[in-house]
Length: 181
Image 1 (cartoon, helix red, strand yellow):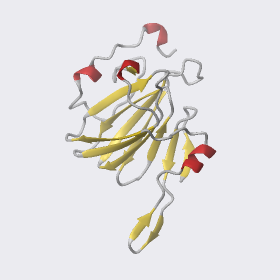
Image 2 (image 1 turned 180 degrees about the vertical axis):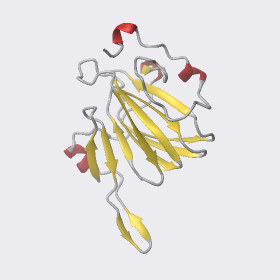
Image 3 (image 1 turned 90 degrees about the vertical axis):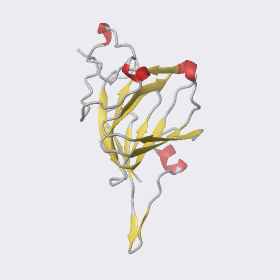
């Protein structure tokens, strides 16, 4: 695997190193030793699958607070998504900054999302399927979220939103004091 750190410290784009022949290719998608060499915590406690019928569907922006913080390894196994993350670590030099990455079945790219990063995605195709490997159990009392269209975050979603849950559409806006300067 090839690990490329993003501008958000601790968040990585992970590309496969394919061993190809006439049958297709083989590639490792996870190796505890390789992740540990990059100080990435993904001792998997849950694996989740999300299937999305309609292009433009938006899920997120979700994260969990201590003591149930989550790191995630996100991969799109069918179709394509635009995956966005926001650094929610108050002491981080990139606090409230975000990045977006296209993940697709065709490009085989994964995104490592560190603890205390909000995560969400928008489907770029009908029938998009997303697999999450998560290091912590879902704990509703510690779940938090950000509004996908919060002006303080300025996330540039590639498509108009066609589907979103009521919960995701109604997360509170960040207070003006948290807005980017």
